[in-house]
Image (tube, rainbow over all chains, first blue to last red; front, top):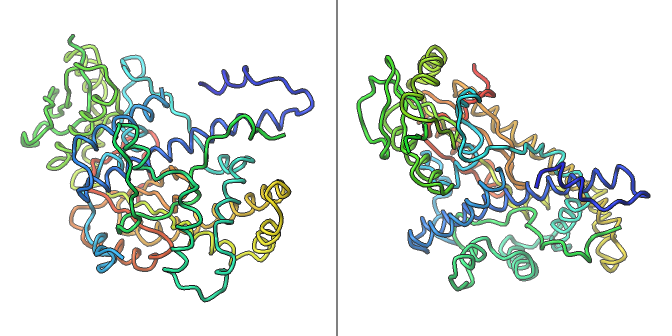
Length: 76
Length: 142
Length: 239
């Protein structure tokens, strides 16, 4: 969801003003940041498990694909 | 501790071959951009650039940081607890209630059972601050 | 059906080594590495792109092209890319010849980071103690304030640690590119373009940093990579 779309769907809260709105925008950007960081962290964990032989290649690839879809999709 | 710890920085003496996880950020963000008018991009690349400073300027982030610092055992600030004791305390108190290990989450996604992964390999570490639970409606503050 | 992904560019005179299933489209002394667009799955495309660049980059200098780039057909590779871009591409390849990208990332140990933050700031320690002494419901605003102070300290720590790593390593590199942090526990994230002959020296410096920083953070040292970070508009700092 783009930032602009998100802004348009925010509930109106006249008493909050621009700070509240700005925070909601920041939170969305931030949740994308955290999600990206979390996705990358998970990818690294999969890599570590693969290197340590804890999971086989097929499993690792499958798990990666799930995460990669989210990562690429997020940027679309 | 694991064997990896015995030769602490041996793993840095040569650069390691990259896994996809190591390069995913630069694969997506970097590289030559062919002139827009000739590029037929099958995967849209609309990149949201996030300045790290802006990211930390919100209530939710601050609460996460407060959470992280509160995970410290109060007796250890300036105390004589040994590092293994500190690690035990942290693992006991924090790990279970916080987000599952990333590998657990990923394993479950692809339908594998989760077993308890021990944090005992050289490569794993406590990352700061952990990804918190999803905010539910009730958490929406005022 | 003739659409092709464009993965990278290299000198046509490079011996034909492993190219991860890509083929070359040549123009003058340049060649682009391409594969047919056969699957619309983003993850397939990503893996192919990565594999092609890793394989070709192992033995040649390859300029990575942005992931997801596709053109109408092989002729378009020449007409729309190699021909009009010839000077720039040839120049970039010349600059990058004989050099590899090495990436250094550092990730904070949470406990160590938080301890350092508390130790370094009596105000944070005091506020932490106050927060702990009341039920969570009663400390909402203090927790926000506490988190804000901690976040600022983490930002400062990241700046200091990034500077430390860059100061140590940049002199051994031809170019550096500092990347966005990527995750909140990132202490440093930087790419270095290093002459092949100096890689061992560079690695020794990285190992030395690893020793100095052990306990506070873990370094991840990766390469040799195709020069992703040095082939975009924002192409790093050149010595």
